[in-house]
Image (cartoon, rainbow, N blue to C red; front, side):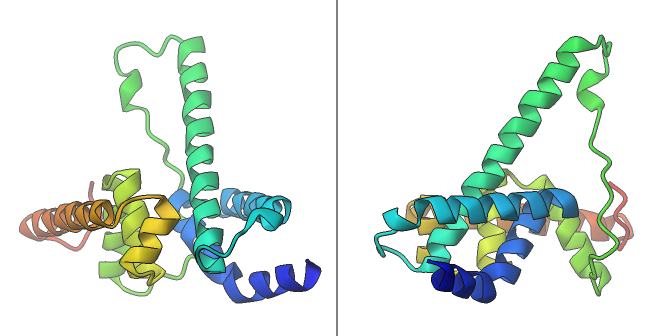
Length: 180
């Protein structure tokens, strides 16, 4: 198993790291979640039947680990909100976590696109990252997300439509800045 694991790590680590980072946008959390994915890979390797590619299987695990992270984060946020009396504006509190300095985004358009992804649903974001950043096919994306091909196409279409709308709105405002 060590040889196989080393091959998986060497071949897919960078893509796996990028996928999770695009989802959570926090370097430390990304590193923790990547380790969690590798632990799940080691624990479940004997159950891998080869119905899909190793990369598809790996990214499916990564997606589930990311979704579990968001669920835990939401439960924690809900418990904290219940503990304190936030008053009327409790629903306005936002996570202001900045992008890591190591993130080397070269152009303003890519920065804006990255910001616009936050306005997409988790499903739309997952599909768009897998399709356009990780270059998975529609079939591979469907397998990773446990969606039908039709759902991937519909989710992709709606996500792209939302991104286009946000880009047009930003351009009409005099564009270029991330002034959301």
